[in-house]
Image (tube, rainbow, N blue to C red; front, side, top):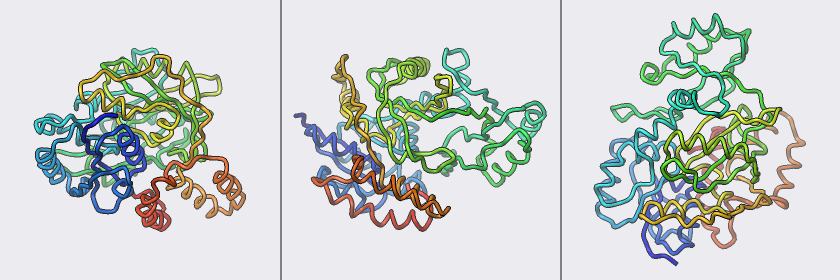
Length: 403
């Protein structure tokens, strides 16, 4: 067992709960941080303390100042984050945060942008032997009109970054929906203009236009890297995806795809990445894999990764505290663990199907209670359920995941 103290932000998130549980099991004292009280991670028996901070979504600058003061007043070995926004902020203000003496679990700002800005990512991948969709980076609507005249394949108008914070601390979040997909017979210019209408960050962060890859299924390679070397990895595929246009898998299971691993290794090497990251691919009918995106942060299926035998948070902690991650070179993760994200993706998936009159969706949903390991529920750590139930009601009303 190891002694040490860490802070885990984003206690509303289930992957934060997975991180809290596994680091506590290693003997670390974990403080669970969040933008309000009684979040699932805070209610876990694995969290020793709680820390409530200003909401980074609406009080971005205040959040950073508050976090700096909190880290300076406490002796944490490291601070971790799991969401797009908090990971971005840890990266952008890493030097300032590290002045408190706390190791920050996020890459440098330049590397963060290289991975998470899809325009930069696909430009960097142009000379790397990894299949990628044809990608265009228009800087204006005039550029889009020119593309519209010569593109004859379906495309996706894709945000360069899911989360964007401007110099004034204003946060913008963009997610894909069915409206982002444009068929060849449709007007790309009109659709693009409608998508960016009212977007205050358009000039600084214009969406890219990317070829739509028609594949069999999306698959992911996740892992932890050190200066461009993928130290260890885990791969999974998704079942019952919500939203249907492309989102989080409600049910996931480990797979082994050597070609996808090789491509992920090349991506990591090109980025020179250090720390955890998530690399998403589309598997095509010919068995190849097209790179879709890279997320330089922890991923939604973190609990599945850990339960399948790859304890990325522990390796990350060792890395942040100056140790060499104790990775078994012969590690062979399990592929027989099938895990469900009941809260909230499977509930949303069922709700979507029932609203369309697809009552037969009840069969796989109910069957999973007997055949699939639940990601969130734990008989030995039941109190987080009290924190998730109010949010379950909220998503059923708003039809979206409340962070």
